[in-house]
Image (cartoon, rainbow, N blue to C red; front, side, top):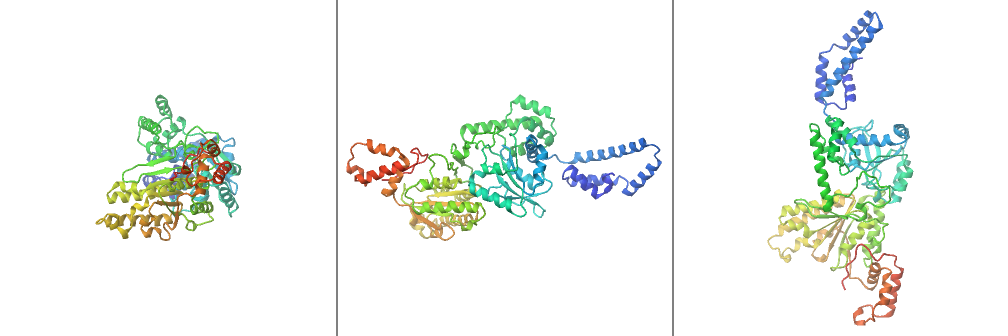
Length: 596
């Protein structure tokens, strides 16, 4: 039966076959349909024609003619369709390659998907694959239906945190990103997987990993199917150019080989921006080549991103650069933005890592950090609301008492990024509008990296709205009031934003505006005093480790006037004994400044 002779039903079939055709295609189909006979006349003509046919060969000829007419109509419609976008096509090609390279192939995938609670792990080391895979699932481009992406663990999914298909009937699926899974404790991860599997009805679970790091053992043992492939290569890019730009694979392959083009630096976003309809083969390859040179210079200068999407998969269990601290800082420098240092946490199990548990002399601050660590795990499991966490802290104390050190140790303890900024950096812009933009940018960066710690140093530089004259800024109270009001608004907003922890530091807490210390803002205030004998002993034991005993034994005869507060043999022996019992490596990567 001729598709177009079915009217609207025929157009729907064509839409499914050709892939979401636009209005122009529909209008073209209607114009073509208007030139064809009606469905009734076609049926009558067929019956009449069939009755008049003498031989089966004549009937076959008629069928072939009708099929040719349908193919001609489809070809005309296909010419009017826009070429597909590069990002979803690249995602589909990478998934097809990963499934095709599995020993079981598509049959294994179909068998797993027939189960009531399938758990699939997809490992494709291309930067940006996690996010674009999520978008393709939401748009129904790689599944028979639109999918509703739900996070298996808080803030560790692959979705954009927005409803891309409002009003659509969508099937739920639990997702987790491979780049985020190492931030979740094994216990929390196991509980989240158990809750998902035991729910009624159990949803499918999908882990999408774009990194080169090993996944937790619980993931690999629980997964029903693991499909993986290497990154982008010339063959896949040539196929992408053919589908999205109509470029013959032989032409693109020849030019890529001639240029010696490497693709391990490419992000899915790069493909979306460069591979577009209307561009020639030479333009696209030249753009990729220029991008490669730019990324190479960034690597030499240390400004590039970590090698998160390298095409050569590492089989070792070594920790990737972005977690090991090999390149711990990424500076965001842009016009009107606050210069925020993004410091990645060091692996919790690495030797000599500075953590809150290894610090001495912090008292209530250490207790607060220990409670926050437990609550953060419960929040990630969905057992605790963010509003129930104590996530805002003010540290005060004399210079040199280790407020910044505490923030760095807290980042390693919680295994979340530390976003370090200060009021002095905000004020570099001078003009009110630029300063407000810098303040806004600091909180925006914190939201983008959540869960994360926003550390605001020298917050007393904001002063107090009630003491403008005493600050020496008489006549500019409106300027400072505007800054304080904006900071208060942003802290209020951050308190309602899940995943943003705020730690502020000051040497002069009395100069702060009282509104900063009210409930819901920097409500927890911990004063850090100068270290006493016990704290000094712990500090020395941490930095010297087992070397402290040798230092004491080999030291020249001590003069009590230089010893300070350690003035008897019993205290020296206690210090020596504490050093021998301390398991901390003497060569810790960070040190706490001590003021005598």
